[in-house]
Length: 392
Image (cartoon, rainbow, N blue to C red; front, side, top):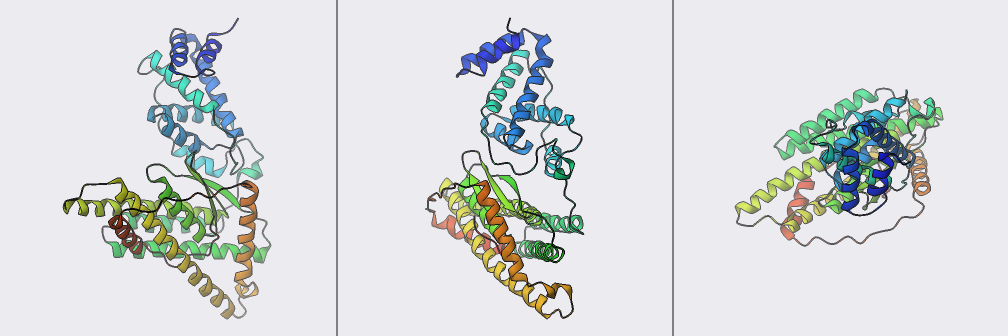
């Protein structure tokens, strides 16, 4: 004889439409003894998501987008419970778990609504497609889960975060420019040092990958901005518009740089867009979607150009410094071949992960004022001292 949960799942998860959800929720609402098994089944669905390549942040982001914040909290509760099974977790997982939303209490606001929300969540989890894995799953061999950080990396990242936080908080464009430029210079230096160290010690570190959410609205412009930042930091970026994220492939130090810098530039760009739009409204113009879209497109395009210029300059300066360091170990390894080898490794890894990619025609900007203000904002946030990259 079928259990209440099996009956509810048959009605709600394997048929389309809201009627099935209502039927399943009614069955579960009348069976409080099934609550523990209902949650256990949800943890199994979460575990299947890991097997398909999903990470905690990926799951919560998609649930929030396709359902709502309440469902995201339910998913976070299932994730937190499921990962308690593992003694070791990948480093990136630990940081994502710390940022999960709070799980709502069970049975709220009433048993029917609670069961209905869980069933809608389970229906979504069951439909998750397999995606490219970007790291080991929980429960993998311990050596696969952890990678020792490079010497001085935590302190370096702390300094970079502090500089970017100040750039986001200041109301003075010139100060934001100086702070962001300094942060990127630190990123570039750290990346080049990592490359030379690995070359001298014949380190066996290989490229990895991470996923970064690209949320609506104006996701095309945001994806272009992320691609520009990834390219400047010797990474490849592949955008999945259907699932709302970009996968960035690169070496670990460069992935850290991309995550930090992209987040900061998006915050700075959004703030600059809001200020520019306020000026437009003060002049009698109503807020328009085309203004914002054109602003962010120009912001992304202009930053991409400036990042590329800074890349070439920083690489040339580092090469000259290494060549002039007589007797220094850095002079024993020519920088450009080292960077070229890393570029090739990143490209090969990206092509293995994504053997079939497509290009998309981007709709052009249609608002001249938005484009002009976006270009100016990118100039104020311009970078200096970037590392060379390969555009994804």
